[in-house]
Length: 214
Image (cartoon, rainbow, N blue to C red):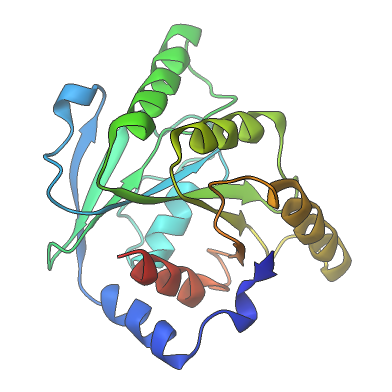
């Protein structure tokens, strides 16, 4: 497993920057598979535990402070939220947070089932970026979604979020532990990304990774 600081050269960074220069807009929220858009554009999805910072990262990534709704309440994202770039190049999909959420159990179970069905049947899905809070590392609920991604042979990449929160020693520890846990997973892309939506760290590398998928 390698980290991102040596993985991208100037050309890759420039390609990622160019991809995200245009505006992005909300397309639709999907609560059932029959409402998914036609499979005409490649899709990049973001998954993670509730309150891991998915919406904040998408906003920072797209230079749009209010594109994805953010909240301190776990479980705020309750749909597959689709966003599209103005050039109609690809979709960004903000998936419902898994794990704890302040919502009725039946609704949480419905979100979970929607995620599973989406992952199993979306042939235009190029990669899932699985967000892991760098303060906590991979939890049991993360392992469950990673197992599903491996089972479905869906390419995924780990993104450590909120990387500005731990100190250097803590960050090194979570980086090494995370790398060790996913090293043998068959569908995991062998590059660990680290980001901070607040400080802007790692966003250029994440944009480059997305451009590489497309």
